[in-house]
Length: 624
Image 1 (cartoon, rainbow, N blue to C red):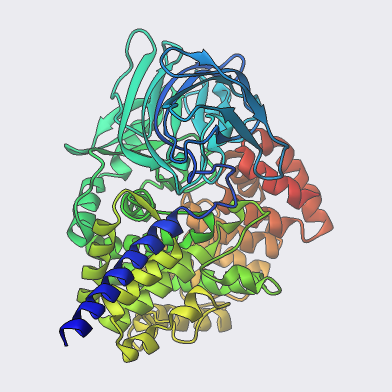
Image 2 (image 1 turned 60 degrees about the vertical axis):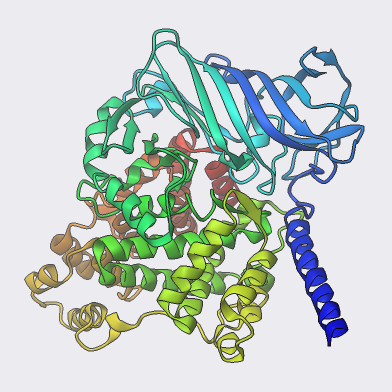
């Protein structure tokens, strides 16, 4: 018996070691979107000293990397996309070394091979950016809200950091950083780090990020920017003409942080501030640590679109704290964040709000799967984007299929157990990068625990390695039941569609919030008469709306139904709004007809200079 116990103990220890080895090995797997070889030599800390030149539209300076030469290798490999490298030296004594650039690879740029010694700890890279750097958006004064000063902002996700800083550009590689940034004296510089709250006299700013982050979370913004506190640990940065509106719109930020902490533990990044960017910013938000970048398109004046802040805040746990190790694991960032966002929404704004968001998520997932007919492999949660741009993974499979997988797990084990599990996941993997396999392993060991009934309810393989939407998907249908809001709106919509004289006051009284209006519009037939369109417009003033969620849906309907009264507003919307997923659907709708395509090209000629490179490259492809 003793011998058997010893053997079992040894086997258990071996299994434990194997498990630990498996987790570490998974994180160190080769990233198909990076040339770096972190198993041999990997970066640990960055000291950045750069100057921002608006006349040349160029960043230049020195990147000093502290590295760990694990294998005593003779070279270290970085990622490079169009950088001008003038020289590279080693150590504090700055002994010059040789370097070579590999062949250009589509989507990836080139490998930067740097000769090092077995004892090399510091690498100094002197460089400047190319005018076409994909991460950099240089705005002339006319493209800003204030119209007086130029503006620069970066967008490093997914693999654009390599276009403005020589780095090992993989989400599986983390490092701390300090930075010194010199800008024109009339402008303020901000980064994804501890930030100043006002301009100084010399235009030189220093930054410190004490937590290890991946390269896609490197961020810089330079402009005529002011700051206003929301509470003791949250605040808003924006151009002066926008600041007052923004501070009003996002007055609940402090409450959001408190609600998030109540769910899944302490916020670990110090301050939580947001920066309202000019309209050309291509996303709703970007979760840069300490300073989320946010589109101005959600400033509706009535706080109706602030759930985006909940989403970007949630990334402080799911994405920034625990990060997908490769872009093929992107759902670990976005699916988790969608789940967390809706839990914050529920905590602050009630179950009905969260249920509405879930319904729109279900619709978006249905549409995404439909769009991927013939590309079913892309509907797996564990994707494979090798030899393709990882930006292609930014779709509703990662966001919504990921969300509904977690929602299904919650239903299978109960919310209290699932919340405890998620808290353990975040705490146990804080400041690390993980793979899908890591999560599945953790799920099996810490929640399912061999329970066959629970395993059958969840069906991990169907979600992670299966196509489409598994039949066990869970979502709330309370809104569709008798007395539910969506059931009532759906009934009113049908009555209106069959009765052109339907009382508009009844509609106004029962279809009030942004989500209710979005739902009402989503239930309408695709083809409506001009009289019906005019009736709806006079009832709800959709054409004149400043709510971008409403504008997107209504303007799409207006294009489909040739509703000319909306034409001027559609054109203005496309010229002034650079948020990619709010404008690309309109261009897609316009180019379906010859007349529409001609009009789209006329608008695009005016709008293209206002768009981020990520946005106009996608639209260029559409137009061609």
